[in-house]
Length: 90
Image 1 (cartoon, rainbow, N blue to C red):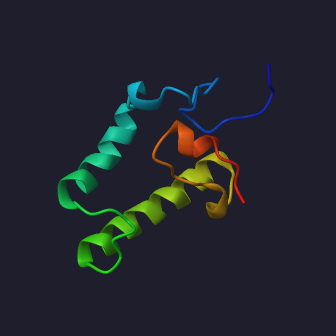
Image 2 (tube, rainbow, N blue to C red):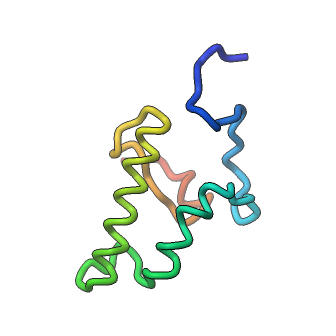
């Protein structure tokens, strides 16, 4: 077993291969609900107000996750699923 310390609330091991059946942590749901209710665009739609809001929310999430896991924001990559995630980074 690792002696590495983890942030409060993080329980090891962290299983990250649930795909569509991943149960949503209540804290994550609480953070996502306001965005889900107010933003109907995706971050690539950056030519509209809605796209800018989605992009900003994504970057805030990326920064928070990076800080939580001790990574840089460039190391946090959001994908649409397992197949995309399995591809090597170039």
